[in-house]
Image 1 (cartoon, rainbow, N blue to C red):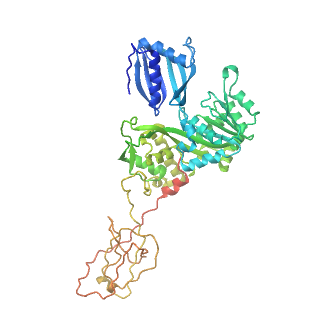
Image 2: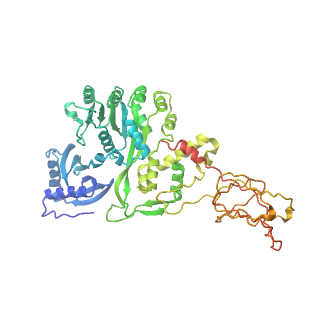
Image 3: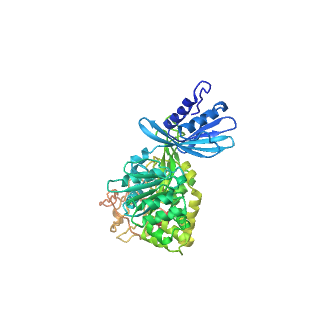
Length: 553
């Protein structure tokens, strides 16, 4: 990836153009010009990771910085203050927005070019990686006539892409949509988009007060940055408008707490809040070179505690010419919370504790960021290494165990350590581990009085037991040649136990009963030691618990 230029003979204009064009072709989201004591270190961010691209020598350093500032519309005479600019770029007929930012450092001005490609936004909401369940929640929230829907996450987590995708779904001739942004990141036909200019007094608060008189149906606020913006947005949502906005928080619970800390009245927030979409971006595995590997014990524990699943194999990154370090592109991990009446009541109650709010937020109906990430690992979309970079897994596992102990008391430790049932993994090529079949009881009824000392009960071979009850089968002991024979034998075959019920016979079971009298010349079957009843395999309490609640803050 590292490039060398002929800095002595190649014009700076061509060098800058080649850096930008090559970065776009590689799918970079940002270009960093990092000033050093001698020269500039150029790095590009691909799929969220920074990679060294080239070294600009000291002789070209000043001219290159000036060139970038000229094409982005910055003041080239000002190097002591931060500046913002923009570049319009056409790539194969597709217009890209390049946002440029400068920052003075001790070694010169650091410049970052952000490459904005909104093709994902135009592709539709269904292409953003939502599960079917989360997608239906988002669509339900967007059908509300009023309320506020928040998209949360860190910088660069795809919040704007998600918001624009929702606006595209709402954009109809019958809907008046007004946006307030700083800056306007994507121009969309049918929208009334306002560019905030704080230097002349046109800030978020002033604009929001004005657009309420513009008869809007939908209002989009680029970002809730302060207390006043939050209060105006909430008040606008309860006056008959649907409000979309973004905010920097980690998850749904943190979002509610952050809005309360912004002095938004509880009764207003409980009435206004419709839904919260929290998301993070993980690198997507390259489908051409991904490789299967066995899961570690720690990874199995994570699957068991969070999803109550046994997963024996997962995909990991490989290497090929079509990807970067085994990854190509990114996928969103999403947590979607639709506010119900019970949660509204809890938000409006000032006596509600954080733990109580947590239990109401993270119910079995909410797939958390960790849970969504694990499902995408099972589907072969991303990897554990990506999940570990984005989510504090150990903290969540600790909270899950604590929650189980609080819910079930002394049996909490037993619950979190109970093996879950095996489920089929879509990418699990190896056969899943089979649990031993459960045999409740079996009974052999002998109609004629016999000498117990001479009665031999053979151990039948068992491959599977069909869990269907059936009437008791009565067999004359003097007429039995082969009892309960089933196709294959497992590692630990089960025995028929006296004075218990025989399991139901099915089409797969073959019981051979010979009606002719047994030939006395045939030697008897050797006796077997007395057997004891087979203990049933305990039911898995993890399933019931983690279906009730599967995450924490």
